[in-house]
Length: 285
Length: 294
Image (cartoon, helix red, strand yellow):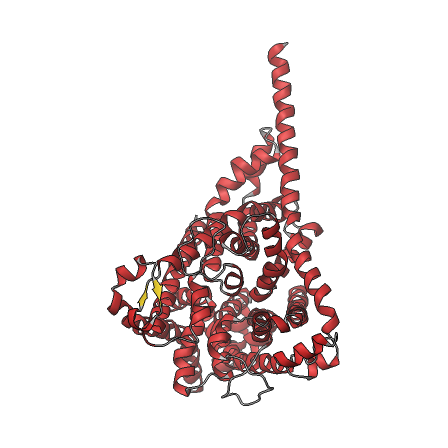
């Protein structure tokens, strides 16, 4: 009897995750119905207008979607050379040595810094630098936000890909060495092709992190409601518009913000799903 | 003569390329340490002056107090006591919610490895883990803040608990998977019930791993800001009533950041937060190492 109750308790705890996810989707969808009903789903995601004036309210998510995608993909682009180097450093060149332990603890520490501290550092240290280099007028903008985001996602991309790189079978590498390949050629022709999809998946998961990042982006992107036209222009991301305006809104505006939250949730869910799918395929081979 | 020369130059070129690539990798890998050092340096340099006893015992100053102190050339008075207590309350309540549920859920997943329900739960746990923190904030706003019709520490705790839950479930599952199956069989063979095998054998043997996972989950949510903005809101006084708006260290940093007169306080608060998270990480790591040796 006691065992039965305990087993039930175990199952209920696991099922709670199901309830939370289900409730989450339900609440987001029911909260955003008003906005989608008023503007239409398709129009909502293709309009860049964000006008809270009482009589002529009009909300569209396009500029925030573009802001989020631009910052995240740029961040991914910036983070690739660094994280692949870190992954090769800890997973191949110095595998199992003290040096790789040091590098991976540095990376772990980077992952531990809260997003708001990254934002402060970006605002007070990086922004003046960007201003001096004339990269953007006040130092705010897509580029500044992406650089900070790139630093924030390096740990996620490199720790996972280092694991996949170190999993490449030894005999494959030794075969290439015995044919006279240099280490770089082994990396290029043996290691990367063999760990490729795993490394790719770790970048996808890092992208998922970047999409949902809120505070650091909010502090650096400039918070203007327009479509960013260039790297130096300001904009707004989906997460930061929610963080900035959620507290003071109601009615249609609140519903529009929830709709943006739902879109963000869907985008990150799809990205994470693709990442996990690639990894599970990789593990099966 | 000629082909021979070209071959040797191509070999030396390949070796050169190899060396060059090696140097590039080392250079780029070491470059990633720069932001870390820069951030820590920035926070230490600007933050250490504000750290004193009153920093831990007094509440955050108002703008007026800060202006007065600045005009007199003093340090800004006051501290972040309301933030520290708020963070403490919310993290403790979130842990009380997330740890038991997370461990039990993790036990379920490790006990039922291949059935369809647990693989569904596993994917949903990943989904929850990847959910942006601001979305968790929105959800808890609807689930807790609206029904209670007030921002509150409870709401903040629920948001943090939802973020901790997937981390604890997965770390529990991974740790329990590493335990030898004979351990469980020995317990059952001695006539122990399933409940006592799980509670007295499996969980104690996996304690180190579970503890590490919990500490890492706690350190992950300690610095969270975005979900708390939508749930706990912030308060200017120390608040022990969990049904009322409460501040946290990270919320205070956000508040100081938005008030030009209080800007000096952000660095010391960030320093406090960084040290706190660092300590949690170090404890987690040393527990993990100790556990691995046995």
